Length: 143
Image: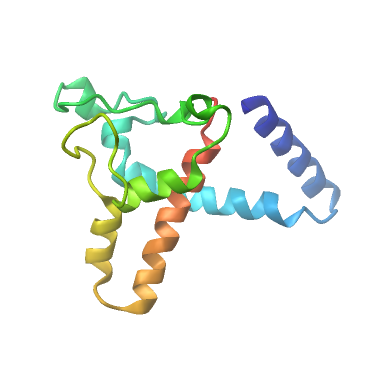
């Protein structure tokens, strides 16, 4: 999977440098994933680590009851398919993390929604943040 993403990046870079139009899906996914990176760094990195391998400061200092999982191996653990909508529901808070007993991970969907209040526009922004996080996680697969 990593080699495929690397090749795709090279192809996109080559197309951009040549001045030809880049296929829509490629650049749009990369743009959304780029938005997800600072969200990950602000909300997830403390447990999952800078490289998303489950080695953040909370783990290093033994402050988690349940170890944070390696988020770069989600596709590998799901027969090569990234569980996009499951990850959305986990971040959103609608799907519990199985095998963890009580939910240890903050439900960022709830946190984002509290910040948004009742504004429809801000609620839409919350969905966008969660999607950006999921796209970012998808971009990390196989690293």
